[in-house]
Structures are given as C-alpha cells and as structure tokens.
Amino acid sequence: MAELTLTNIGKHFGGAPALQSVTTRVNDREFLALLGPSGCGKSTLLRLLAGFEQPNAGSIRIGNREVANADTRLIVPPEERNIGYVFQSYALWPHMTVRRNVGYPLEIRKLSKSDREARIDAALEATALGPYGDRMPSDLSGGQRQRVALARCLVSDPTAVLLDEPLANLDVALRASMQGVFCDFHQRTGATMVYVTHDQAEAMAMADRIAVMNEGRIIQLDTPEALYARPRSRFVAEFIGDGAVVPLTGTSHSDSACEATLLGTRLRVETDSPTPEMACLRPENLTIAETGDIRARVERVTYLGGRYRLDLVAASGEPLVTQSNTRYAPGEHIGLALTAPWAFAAA
Ligand code: ATP
Image (tube, rainbow, N blue to C red; front, side, top):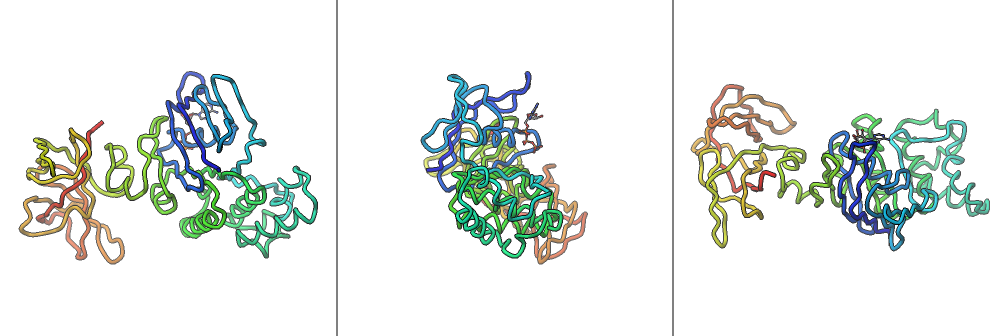
C-alpha cells in the first residue's frame, strides 16, 4: 500500500509559515496534483513527503509506516522512504551515459549486474528510451532528459513518485506530449503520484484529483470535474477554468431548490451552501439569445479555433465570459439567457 497521509502538518521558515494545518490523504495508486500560485507551499509539501524537509507540526505516514512526527521527533531519512523524486531541472549526472544515470540508484543498492541490466532495460523500454542508452545527457532534448529522470525513478520500484513541476522547462508542444508520457507511466506502473504544478490546464488534463492550495493551506481537494462545476470559494472558481464570479442577493431556499437574484434576474441556483453569496458563471451557463433578460456589451473577441471567446460587460457592470460560433464586434450589444449556475459562500 502506498497511501500517503499527512496529519496537521505545519512548516515555517524562520517566522514565515509555509504550510498551516495541512491534513490530507493521497490514495494508493492515485495521481494527485498540487495546484496553486507561486509561493503557496506546493514544493514544501512535496519535500516534506520526500524527507528533504522536516515538519514543525504534525505527522506523515507512507503506507502503514510513520516517517515523520514533529512531536516524537521521528525522522525517516529520504533514502529509507523508497520514494522517487523528479525535479524540474532533471538532476542528471552529465558525465554518465543514459544507462548509467538510470542504473545509478541500483549501483548504490549493490544489486547483481544481471538484475541491474534487466531493470534498466525495462525502465528504458517503459519511457521509450530504448535507442538512447549510450547517449550522454547533453546529447538529448529536454523531453528526453526528463524521461531519463523518470526512468531513473522507475528502476528502484518506488512506493510513490513525487514530481516537482517536471515540465516547466519544456515548450508547449513538448509539454503536451510529455503529459501523455506521465499518464502512461502512471497507468503502467500503478504508482502513487503527487505532481506539483501551477498550470491548471496541466493539472486538469492529468490528475485523478487536484488539491488547490493557497497561502500554505489546501483549500479544496476534488476531482477536476467537481472543482470546475462545484467550486467552494471565489479563489477556486477563479483559479480553475474560465468564467466570471458575480454576487447574488435575496437567496431563498425551498426543499428542492434555491433561488436568488443575480445580474438583475431572479433564477434557480445550484448550491450546497446554506448561505450562498456568489455564483460562478462558466461560459456554458450563458447562451446568446436576443430575447435574453441579461443585456451585455461585447468588450473583446478572441478566436479559439472553431469558435470565439467573448469578454463582456453586463448592463449592471459585472464582467462576464461566454463563447459563440459567430464573430461579434467589440461594442455590440447582445442578450444572454442564463442557466442555473453554481453558487457558494464568499469565504
Ligand atoms: P513555486 O510555484 O514558486 O515553486 P511553491 O508553491 O512551490 O512556489 P514553496 O516553494 O513551497 O512554494 O514555498 C512556500 C513558502 O515558503 C514561500 O513563501 C517560500 O519563500 C518559503 N520557502 C520555501 N523554502 C524555503 C527555504 N528553504 N527557506 C526560506 N523560505 C522558504
């Protein structure tokens, strides 16, 4: 079992808190993304799991084994945690061939040569590096170097693999194909994976669940679909996916539905909060309809390929976003029909 459990984790550097009361679990064989803005604590959380940092509060378990506990001062060192770590900077040894780089963790463990060679072959095969074994890292592209780092992880048969922005140095096209490599790796090995990124599209494309972080806390942990459809705060609504957040007033709950006023219109909203104050309007919540109750002016038009993104300002002043199959011109006035949006408490 490679379940990772963090209980009440606190970490500070000097006086400044980097993580506060983080309690969460990464399930066995799960691909979890840690997503949030720069400085929110993503890398610190990963480094605590790896054992490169120690918590100031709380405890960490890998499977059934406690590996860190701030109260008892238990600290299991990184090399005894059987965890793989992939860095943004690849961290390959420049003077060693690809094969030697990949096999190095096994040299340290003193495995027999035949066992080592078999494992290296399997790892190179799994990362499509078969033909590159005798090359030096300097003769590889960025994507190939990152695959070597992944293969080096794989040879040790780790309980879990931690990845810290592994694609940040690659161009857009290579990032997309490497996302496929990581997803294949996950499916093939069934490894528990924790993947740090500040790119929401990358997290949405790859992860089973995403932990959205801000200011040292996990503020919502859910599937990509649930984060998009049912954000529980303004921060998550704005950080994940496209759309606009607007205030709502006059909320009334009945047994089966919740109604509120937004953009000057009374309508049904979806919510799990007893006191919703904001609604998240995704582009698909707004349909262009000349007879629509909501009037808006087109501010900006962006061609997305096959359709257009429209930035709008409602007559009541709120910025909105929708999509259209036809081109509108900035300054045009349009009508909008609104389908029941998701609503949440502001805090
Ligand atoms: P980024 O996306 O920019 O890498 P992050 O979300 O990974 O950011 P962390 O690197 O975990 O954020 O940093 C969290 C906070 O802790 C930041 O305020 C950072 O400056 C601080 N911090 C991290 N490591 C150290 C350190 N070794 N010494 C002092 N402060 C640190």
